[in-house]
Amino acid sequence: MIGSTFYSSQLVFTACMGYQDLNESRLQELRSKHRPAVMAAFEERLKGLQAWRDSKDLATKLYNSKKTQNQLFI
Image 1 (cartoon, rainbow, N blue to C red):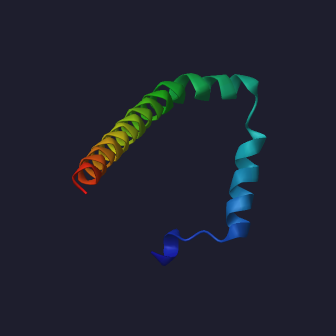
Image 2 (image 1 turned 60 degrees about the vertical axis):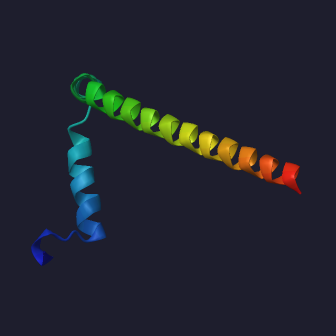
């Protein structure tokens, strides 16, 4: 575990060394390679968020419906 720990200066050094090899054609290559996976992950998270919102709305509707029914009997 200790061998895999990065100090901030090592992390900055590594990033700077990698940045030297970066140009527009390399960026395009990386975009083409990774964008489909990123977009797929984004879509999955969006679906999960929508399902969570839908379930939250349903729970709220059920709660409000039950509350309204209880108020009718009072």
